[in-house]
Length: 308
Ligand code: PSU
Ligand code: MN
Image (cartoon, rainbow, N blue to C red):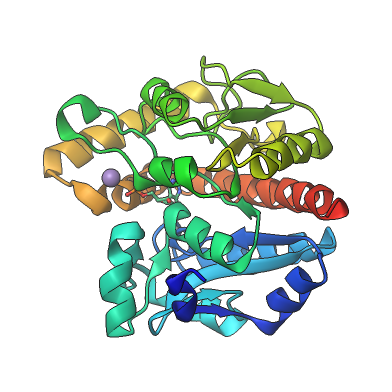
């Protein structure tokens, strides 16, 4: 048994679904407490759960609550995380020892959500964006732990590609080095979160949830270690004008540098700044792409659950 299991708390609904072989989709909590403002964060998180249920799957929002890696948060716990916002510790892999030993709370990033999902036996996780290699990483060495987790932990992550707060080219290089397949759902091009195109290519274009599930099953069955990244372009009607959003992203990155913000604060700062600079337009797009990813995640989970 993995000794981390003693810190794991899986909700009865999620446990029953997993035992019965029904599809389950994991969801992260940093997007709730550090990725969006209150109350849109809580509304979005609850709506995402609803969308997953409508697709016939069970949602499992992951967070660290009183020192337990909780898989399947209640609506009250989601409200608590959303209201507390930045006051909840943003928890990546390196934060686990202290938070668990002290019995504290933490909002799980892509990294720690993957850890919780894998421990519980969940194979699919849907979110908005992942961390990656930041612009300027040649000197800052700011590379998200999410990339290392994707290399090691067997969970499929559905996202809307990577935001250009990151260096997309370097992020793809890093994923290649670490053996993580980058799949485009119905697209050859890596989506850039707010926009459907980025100028970069994904490794493979796959057009159906079944093809994606089949590839991931081979990865799991053959012990190829690590996860898979599925990039799902934002629906056309919600996508943003590339010049407009990139101008604002550049301004946010410049301000971040000017203020000397670094480390774990960088990503939350940039997300907030972009939301402010675009007067909430980027938040609307962000919410819609998360819904879109939840839908695809549930479909992939259903395909994975159909063969046991
Ligand atoms: N990118 C987004 N939205 C987010 C995040 C990233 O577009 O909410 C969050 C995720 O939780 C991700 C984390 O795992 O930020 C990465 O943080 P860092 O760059 O500090 O590794
Ligand atoms: Mn970082």
